[in-house]
Amino acid sequence: MKKFFQKMALLALAGGIAISAQATTPDEDLAAFQSFFKNRFPDVTMEEYTNGVYSIDPIGRENWEAIEEFPPYEPFIDEGQAMWDTPFANGKTYKDCYPDGPAIKGKFPHWDKQQGKVITLPLALNQCREANGEKPLKYKKGPINDILSYIAYESRGQVTNIVIPDDDPKALAAYEAGKKFYYTRRGQLNFSCANCHLQNAGMKIRSDILSPALGHTTHFPVYRSKWGTVGTLHRRFTGCNKQVRAKPFKAHGDQYRNLEYFLTYMSNGLPLNGPGARK
Amino acid sequence: MQIKRMIKVLSAALLMSVCLSTQAQEAAPAADPNIARAQGMIADADKARKKAASVEGEWRDTGKMLKQAKAALKKGDHVKAMKLAAKAHKQGVLGQQQAMDQKALRMPSYLKY
Image (cartoon, rainbow over all chains, first blue to last red):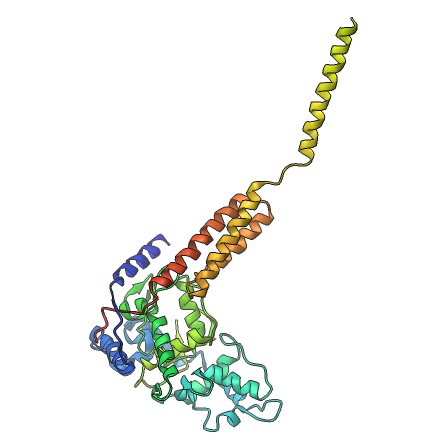
């Protein structure tokens, strides 16, 4: 345990150098973010990053490929399809909310000018449920993962293309808030998201290899062997914050929705390949 | 002879009154100042935690420590309660300081623009 903390402290020190933020545009951020990985792992193609840590960990990849032969998330996709097709008590279905569904994952997260906030897919699904007199689903565990798995599966191959509209300065503010969250150190261990998944991507933390941030959003929801089930992106955010000993924020609250907006923008151009399987 | 007897009676009465007053003191002990001190420390630590939370800097275990401190105090273990409250207070102060130090976004130097 002591060694773990020593390692964390060293990593924290290594990440100590920071420069004050100049005003940068989202496009400039994207270019810097993606070129960082191109330089860090020159042999890894952009599309490979959608496979998370398995794009840079050949041994883990072998195990993962074996797992993918009988994907553990398949039953969740089937359950999700049943949910999608089953009418609500008022006779309507999700399809009434999203006529071009179920392959709608590529449209999320997006800025909603009317609501004045980032709308994520789970939030949109719950808004649909509530508009039809149904109870909202819990955001981290349970049935939300079924329907998200189905939608993600149907959306495979769509390309991440997050847009920050020019006509509403609040959209850029939400992106900037997400970016600020990403680079802010927090918790007792004083780590930012970037410390692990950007600066130290590919390095070992105990027996695990830190996954690259690029492509983090393409494969959610994921079946994690650690969880023994499928979980949402915001469940993972919660876990990451807890690992650095910060108090996590509410799933699909402002902080994590803005973070998802920024982080997904950083993966612009990468295809969606959820649901995924991870260690 | 009479004087000797009187002295004996008086000293016995004096001794009895001393004993009785001691017993009375034992029956109604003064409130333990440590309990009030522990309560104050817990309240201060909770204030520090809330301040950290208000700037999104609360740490994971601070709330848990405060709960444990309150439980310890309930059981009469004010030493443990004070220890936990002091720890929680420190976490609250540091969490707030950490967030304030990073009020402005600082981009890492390893990202090349």
